[in-house]
Length: 308
Image 1 (cartoon, helix red, strand yellow):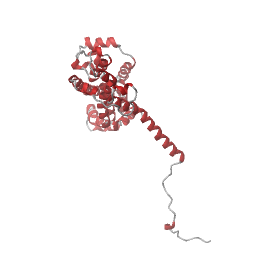
Image 2 (cartoon, one colour):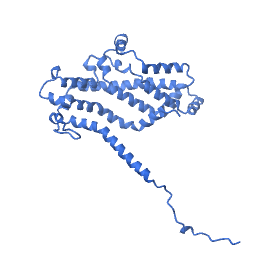
Image 3 (tube, rainbow, N blue to C red):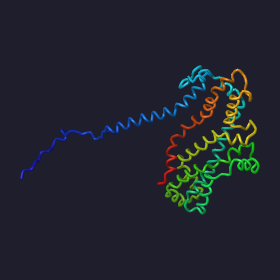
Image 4 (spheres, helix red, strand yellow):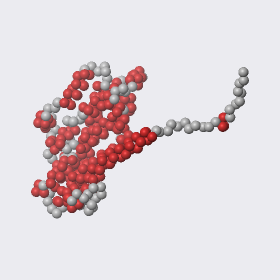
């Protein structure tokens, strides 16, 4: 029997590429996906860019429909009218206060409530969940709520009429509840063995590891409070207590009806782009704030909405 004892020359062995090449179908899908997403982004951004352009355009170009992505007949008249009014800055400060206080109160109530509901051994757990869910589908109505807040609780013309009635969002509560249900029980058990109480586990273990969902819920509450105007319009009579959204709403009404309080040579110009200016001034702080918590946003919603 003859055996081949020749040792192969390793250096002569051809080295094959180890990476897997993308198929033509996959590359086609990737290109189509990028193009589709770019189109969606363009369609989404166009209305906002158009509003910004109108905010800095003159009345003639706006009325002629010639303003698209760039301002035409650049002017700052409406901005001057709004920014020169001392009441605007008072109401803007009110909005900041209402948003900060309301978000803190909402998170302080929603977070422990959601954590308690996520505990399977909680006595009466089904009842408390039912109470929360019931309010999603049934409410007392506008008039009973007005009587309750204004007359029974005596919160009319106060910050608490804006902050307290909507302090707990049931949607946010259920998302946080699902997040806490997926929290590793081993960490809580180990902390309990080390001597931490329920409050210690919640404050020192659970909350530091829940930054994603906490940041997401904070964003939801802050945006809701910042954009809210109807509660203030309903419960506040004093101009010094208005949020900026009510101020801008009244400014729009005045520009639309000069006889109601705004008159002068600049009325036509202000009426032409007041909606664009008001939307820009209202949304700008949220746009500046959003990037700081954007990295938590997707993970916070997904972790709180999927039960694993």
